[in-house]
Length: 172
Image (cartoon, rainbow, N blue to C red; front, side, top):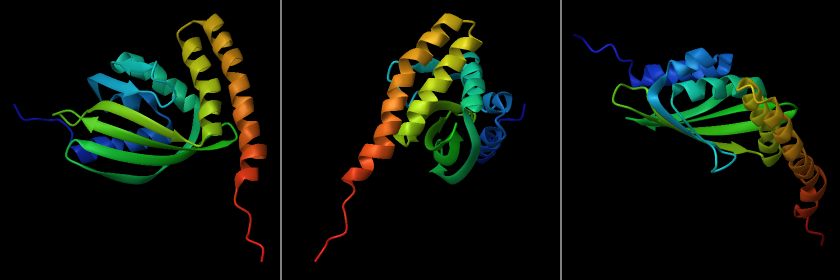
């Protein structure tokens, strides 16, 4: 029987297209059944298996909008992709480290995001959305209430305090 597995290039192209369309089902089709995702927000959050990833991706595509990949590099079974998007009004950039299995399905995803205000905006949106999808409305409200002050502090600091630390022009 011939091997009908996709090539690495095909999987990566499908993954990118699914992300840019916000299509969780198409993204899940790129995944290995034993997929593992490591969160950029906390070491306490790790997803395993395509069922967990389906809910996560559906929630993520609600929170992260206008995804446009701009960089791709890799070979063999390891690729890095980078995109720009927005979370609410915050510009967001994420790097994804993808490792593929022997059938060219994604078996491991490690995410890295910036800037901090976008990450905290993501935290206040994604966590509650994921909890709501799981039917845990009380937890969704608690997550929103506990993350909103962190987001407010980070956003204030980024807009008002951090600019004060930029080097000024040297006066002679």
